[in-house]
Length: 114
Image (cartoon, rainbow, N blue to C red; front, side, top):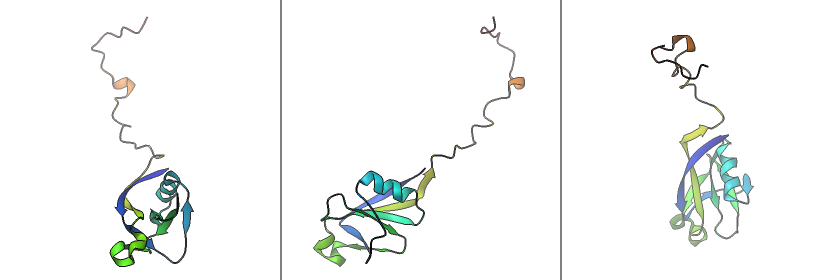
């Protein structure tokens, strides 16, 4: 699956009138957001235990100065889009690193042949 890094922002929250997606653990929220291109990040609700809410790129971010004490205990995790990589796709860069068997040099005696 896709794995991304996030910027952690205490005292910030995504601004939205409705819930898009939610999760009950940090691991679930991160995995859900990692694997969804529409997900811009998620926040831990300051007053709900294990209340992780995911948001799209269209949602704004507010801080406690703008939104008051209500968000001071929120922790926002903003996806750093440039850090996302797909762990399922194996890079081909090692493909040509090894010489072909018929190109191998015969300088050293092969002691494994019996």
